[in-house]
Each structure stands twice: as C-alpha cells, then as structure tokens.
Image (cartoon, rainbow, N blue to C red; front, side, top):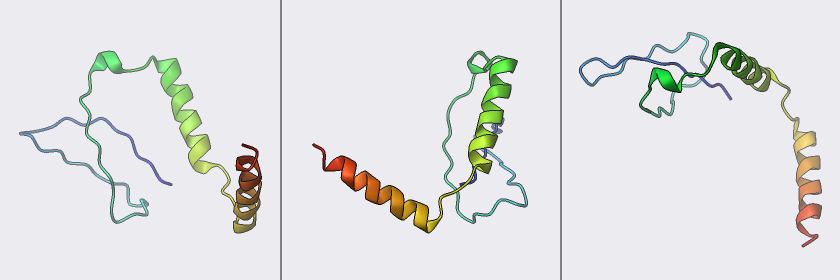
Amino acid sequence: MEALRTIHKTENNYLNISIPLNFQSIYVEVIVLPYSKKDELSNENTTFKNEFQEMLLNGPTMTTEDEAFFIEKQKKFTQWK
C-alpha cells in the first residue's frame, strides 16, 4: 500500500495536491483534517514516525502460501472459544 501524508494550505476553499510520478494508483482517498502547528510532533518524534512508516511501507509482503498458512492458523485460534 502506498501512502502519502503532507500538509497543504488551502486557497479560496480549494486544495491542490501534486502526486509523485511514481505513485501507482489512479484513484485515491483524500481525508481533509484541520491542521494546527501545535499539533505538530517534536522533530525527534517526527523522525522516528517517518522512519517507522518507511519500514512498514517497504517491509516484506506475504506470499500466497504465507497468507494461506496464516488463515489456517487463524481458523484454529477462533475455534478455541
């Protein structure tokens, strides 16, 4: 999954967002939230957050076999009720 998080300034109630050329999707979901500088994290936390997001986005993905194995184990756990 590709994710993009940026802060933008509105102009006359319009928002213009440039998408990187390597972004793979044609359709996107846009969620608009008010932003205040006091909401901004400290520089140290922001760096950690960015590194963590990069690790998650660039991390390994499950193969079809891994997914089937996971689903099978999940079924066994739900039967323990």
